[in-house]
Amino acid sequence: MYKLAIFDMDGTILDTLTDLASAINHALEACGFPARTVDEVRMFVGNGILKLVERAVPAGSTQEEKDRVKAAFDAYYQEHCLDETRPYAGIVDVIRDLRSAGVKTACVSNKPDYGVQSLCDRFFPGLFDHAVGMKPGMAVKPAPDAVYDVFDALKTEASEAVYIGDSDVDLMTAKNAGTDCISVLWGFRDKAFLTEHGAAVFAEKPEELLTICL
Image (cartoon, rainbow, N blue to C red; front, side, top):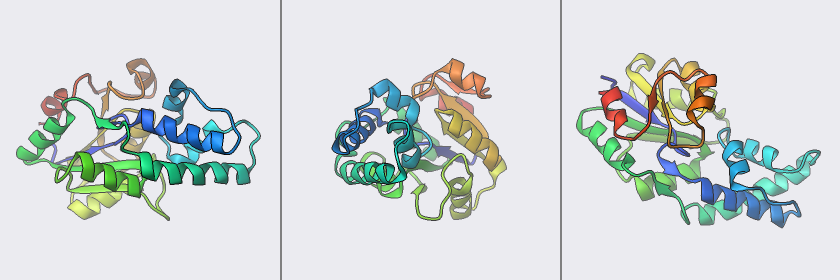
């Protein structure tokens, strides 16, 4: 049994795609750029807001233009990150059951820390022992910095933990942090894509996480 389960946020515990797409398209259009489709945004997310902006703006955009889009995104998303975002069906019960079984739980995301904290408070009150979003000076995933922050806060070793996510970024994060990884199949990447990037353990439904973790 693992002593610690670390969850990614977007595409793993929360379906945030609609709100992320709305925010980036609001920012793009405010800066005079064309909007992106939801499927495009699905493939753009995973490496933090800076990368989302870089992938969404037209090729050849200047750094000043990217900075303007990011500022517009941040201002809009802070106000609208709860519009359509919802937990995936069954995931709240799974986290609660893991805690009841004695497993510590944490959330690590490349989303800005203000978003991580507000979303955890809104949808998972009292269900995470520690939650970490991106802050100044912290390297985004797949760098292991945020996972190490969890280890320090919860006094847990990498060998005692499992990282749960939906993307290739999560697979690399787990590898860099020295943890096992479970790839979920209800998120932003499909099984074929995850397998190509080295995934070996999968959960098709949230309740399968209980069997694997316990």
